[in-house]
Length: 425
Image (tube, rainbow, N blue to C red; front, side):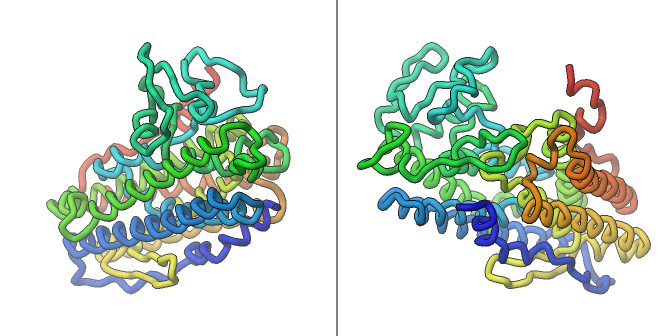
């Protein structure tokens, strides 16, 4: 199986990266109408995330029932497809406390994978920061957590939920997309060389088991997949017309617009440009890439950028190809300042263009973890161009905040952008 094969299975879903032509500004657009549509888009994105997670769950069932190269390949392709709508929903995280409090269950990273399963000796055997660094719950039915013995004889969704961030250590990621990613791909031991994780299907084959504990590994994978589906159902419900998240965002016009812009600005700057991209580039560290086992990081970054633009334009292409449009923040801004609306849309498109250059390089030349490698001048420049676009569009987002008289909005920062020297201390 090649990385190109997996990428090809999901390429159709990148149709969402197409640059839209925004609708003419609607003079009658109101904040209430914008927020109603913003909530509708949220429910659509989480509904698409749910349906693709359910497809992943079925592919995992097939892998467990009949482990083979084909069923493992299909499960990996389903995981990659599931990341597309979810990443486009991430712009809802910042500014919406309900989403932010929930997000860690489904998308926490980076993770100390030794908590879950066997790891290569190069991973090490202990960590000063994490007593569960190599706990390997799949191999060990009983663990000590905070001095108390916990029984994992039966691996269930409830059990691994309790393991998530055990000992209040954020790197103890036991659930969500990245736990599933690790269980499908295994560790990427290539550093900044070519290649992703290379887990074999026989890690799930009880008759020809590699890695040991194939039955428990299958139970863990199924439990994680079950939780992902359940968690996404919760968010679909939260963004229903009468859901808690929808009610919160529609309760006050200014507060709702603040939520949209906080999501756009914080994801653009502190989270994506800073923590997910610049930090890895500064350290030239492949462990700092978002989808580090599958080499799918470029796609997740691209879809985050698509989601940021979607929050501004009110446009979203669903996984079935349906295009949603409606009253948007762009309409409100254009009614006040057409030049500013044109400016920010131009910058959003410039960022997407840079992200698509990164995507093309990842599909044709080298993976994202190779791009951020030391002494890779061309690869580093491609990633930096996308970072620059994100930083530049954040400046325009701040001008939009001022133009709508929303007062001071705190956007997420990042040491990697604001205080790079601190990264090396």
